[in-house]
Image (cartoon, rainbow, N blue to C red):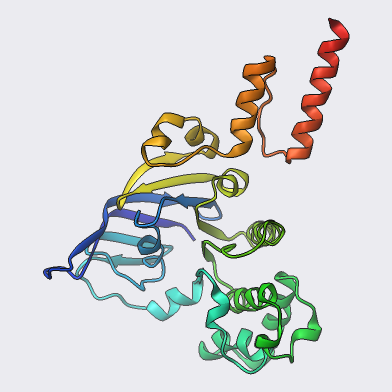
Length: 290
């Protein structure tokens, strides 16, 4: 399912002393099956934007289209139930939303409330556990007896059990250690590829945006500041500084390598270890010729 924001403005508490314009004249397009990263500092409008994807918020001006669903300012939206069945949002610290007495019941809660038959619910729970890399032996356990990382995976499994076509990730690795962050991001990317999901990642991590995203949108003060392919965007170093953003460390490293050695290495999402091997090989060859 594709997403389109067409000149969207959103104002909190309009007409009151607390009026605040969180989004202003924002237009962007997320193609079906693509992976888009949305970047910006706190207050840039990221959280407001993603709440428009499943109509938790509706535009003050403009329109939002998600597949065949259109939400226009000033118009009553229909079929929100069907829309929300197809859009899954993983908010920060999703484990805080767990409440059932067993893992199985928590994962099954969404499909059950949308009228899915019991046999299919059981299949979805099994598939969701597998997708988040949890074993069957946790099925009957209380989610509150699990580790923090496992609890987060259970919460994510609950979103996946709805079989969404659009997956929105709001800082999904917040609070995890570096290893946990990498495992979580790799898991989401595998799901994205395997299920053909339209994925929107809201993140502060320039590295994650560079590694996983097809496109990057940078927000600042509720407006779209920059948009494009990750490598194209992150080359615009001086413009990024204007909104207090840095380029990913790996690109900084490759730039310094080229300045000091004259060796230019194209970044094509290689792991750091592979880049290091390439650099060592190029240096060794150069030394052999000197």
